[in-house]
Image 1 (cartoon, rainbow, N blue to C red):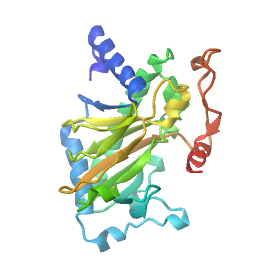
Image 2 (image 1 turned 180 degrees about the vertical axis):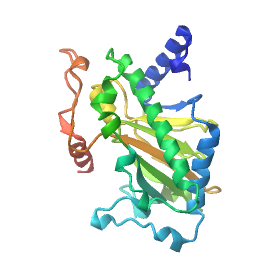
Image 3 (image 1 turned 60 degrees about the vertical axis):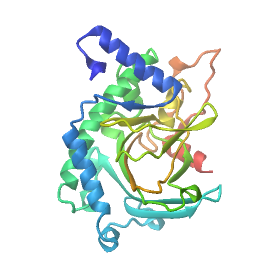
Length: 291
């Protein structure tokens, strides 16, 4: 709430903290984000309710990756590059803008799933605008600039992925998600207070603390590219837990796949700081990372 405070001092301090975290870590806990606890509680209850159902109920929503249909329920049990198992169930779907969502594949049970998730998507989209405005100002740009560069209200997609990591008797043999940076512009994460997010900071893995009622926010590759590397997209991974099921609700704010050419903004480039990234569409960037 401080980033829009009436009090100039409070506002400046809060904006500077956000900017500094984006430069130094590229990931942060957002507190006092204005999202009602009642709403985030409903979103969590709905997601946990979905995963608590029998497998045959969840399978009704199964995605079909072979057919290029990535939305829906999926399960991943695979060896990663370092020979550990990646172990998670997930549900993935687009939640904003409303005209790009397909409600037919959203879970019908729990009955509050659609209402809670829609309201959360709307409020999270407004929060993304506020964060992008602060990051724009931090680069010496006009407030609305980064938002415009990632597609604005019409084109920036919010994709939600609920990750469900079962208890794991031998956590040293498994990872929830292997090390990666997010391709998004921003990623917002809710979780069920079971630690598991690890960040690669100054050469070592650091486990993120769990802060009650906070939303974890990552700067993704898209904003790193636009800022010419001034804001960081940090390498991170998810680890599983021996005693507890870990659930996280990640919302990736993604630019349109082909409509926009992502490259360092001219204002972030100089003779001393030449462009660090070649121009690519979002689709090309993803492909480049995969191969």
